[in-house]
Image (cartoon, rainbow, N blue to C red):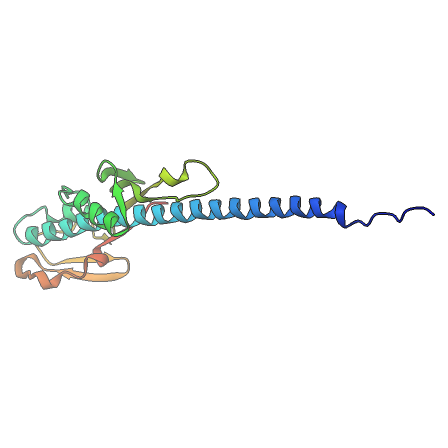
Length: 201
């Protein structure tokens, strides 16, 4: 009599092990890429926050300068152009927001102009690493990112306006009246009405 044909079980087991190994490797690789993507997203969020903080700090400086100039400086309208700030606290503001996002600013907040608007470019590096993965070196690799935020003036006024008399500003559709002869700091609206701070595209 002939011997019975051997079953397929012995042949399929190595294939099953091989396929399982491939699936496990693919899963670990996907996890590694997800780790890297998460680190990059965290870095970009930190860079965005730091750049906005730098620009907002200079917007506050503009508001302080404008408040002090109205009624005492005939060129107080120049402050509304958004370019008279010195940026003394911009880097410190960027550092604070980066630290809150577990990151470090590289080289401070750098002045930048985008589409004619002043602002800051900030580069950051995360304090945390991508983490251990099947990709060599990720356990020591830090994510980096950069962002730019600008300060955009929102107010317009008549070209023949007299800065010594009652002034009407159109700030994005909101009318703001300023009388230099009877000025009070409360006459100024919130900084966001006069200047928009946003990330550059």
